[in-house]
Image (cartoon, rainbow, N blue to C red):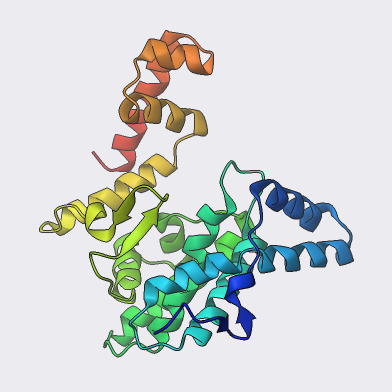
Length: 262
């Protein structure tokens, strides 16, 4: 599978444009607030200005025996979905939101032609879960939790997790999942001890519980436990008292434990 060729789907990859973050913000404002014609033009520029993002994603799927033109077209569908669903008011780079959307679209394409045998009932659950996920994203503009998807399709959260995991295309543990140019994180770096399925599900439950916290609570826990700051340092940085930080931190930890059933 060759990706350094000059053209993919008739697109000269050596001449693909790259938009600045400022230009992306301007285009998203036009898409949201401009006239129909202005909005469509801005959307087209956003698509054209992010084709290199699609190209970088499909390179991760080299060696799968897939036609690069086909994958590029599928990746462009994921890009357009990302542009349509992205909320520019959030303090998140578009690429951070767009890459998982593009990967998801490519994986769905690969899943449909996968030689692996997955039971019909699991496939049906996965299909319903993905439909529910896209409905919730369309309605709320955010990624739904596992519990929300499970509630939507009336099944247990663990059934959703098992179904979605079953249809994911297997990848090498040496596949890079992120790189900022100076440091690369591989799949193997993200793996923990998988000998206990309960721990796997507990990790999912923890992410769900943290996702239910307020933005202030998330910020406090991040500063306290990831950056190693004291409660006094946190209080000075966000402009509240040390006592308030202590109360919010304790409340957040109690809610996490409650959501995890402890």
